[in-house]
Amino acid sequence: MILREYLPSIDQALCRKCRKCEEICPAAAISLARDKKDEKKMTVNPARCIDCQRCMDACPENAITMLPREADRALRVDLSGLDPEEIKRLCRRAGLAPGEAVCACSFITARELAAAVLLGAKTPEDVCAMTGVRRGCGIYCLVNVFKILEAGGITPEGRRKSRLYHHPLDPLDIPEERLREIDARFPQFRLVEDVALIRKYRGRERREEA
Image (cartoon, rainbow, N blue to C red; front, side):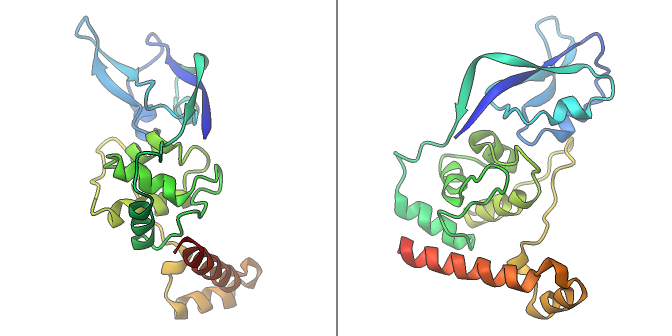
């Protein structure tokens, strides 16, 4: 569970509609839209915002400030109405253990990502908005978001106004020969050792979940 405490407020007098905030938002919570006067302006969808504050950092005009929400909003995926076996199957198709932390910043688990997909998430932004994944660095966990979506038969297309679509490698996806080459060149990172531990953990958790 993640508490979302703040919400972006956009000063329309300062905003130049460069859309950098839209490009950087991992949850697609900001977009250029028309208001009631049919004027275009950057708008925030409070239901999607995960309070990562990237938009504020990215704005070149300092037009965005983070203001406290009227009430903190708990961000969680409700697993109670879902079939636990279906969640397990989806995680395993993605090569993940259900209880595995797929986000090093928030410790969100693979079963939460799987639940988001089973509840209708179709894009990385949907998964992000539903779970809060990618609220921190947003790098490692994106790999797992793509894996879960692909395991669910979904191949998301990149948004035009987004710089967040990329598909970096999971360490387990690196060919064994290449893995050892990297490890020999950069032994201080203990890559082979880390990969062995990840494989050991995932294998143990799969046996426990079976």
